[in-house]
Image (cartoon, rainbow, N blue to C red):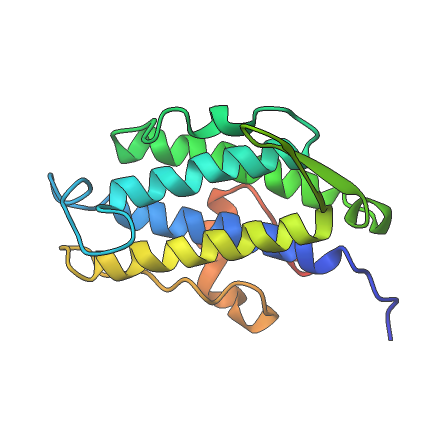
Length: 187
């Protein structure tokens, strides 16, 4: 039995997050004109609003995890991107930052304190808890976009087949498009 690596799950979740975003954004890029910004029933009023929210919150937390002080400036512009192409590029960049951070994680890092710069205070949390929260937040809101896609011309993509080895047959093209290797995902 191999030694337990407490960082492995976070590495896999970071890759899973980037793959799910890649797949979801690819689906959104196939939307008909007007569907991306159309009013919908969800926590946020459109696919555009929800994807921008995911991005700005990712900016906030990834910056904090990297030791930055961006804080609330991350969402100073509520919807920084009005089109899916530029939004997807920005999401891919922050996803790669998160993958890089998780690739370098050590058990000591997971037990360290992260300082999140709020508007009126510094929130201090364990890195492990911030990462868990961030992955949950992303999954939660991607699910909302997935549901909203049901009311569009684009079929919602499969988003839950990334972490286990048996699902490699479903993600090969996307792994290659992201410049990764399957062996990297499974280590």
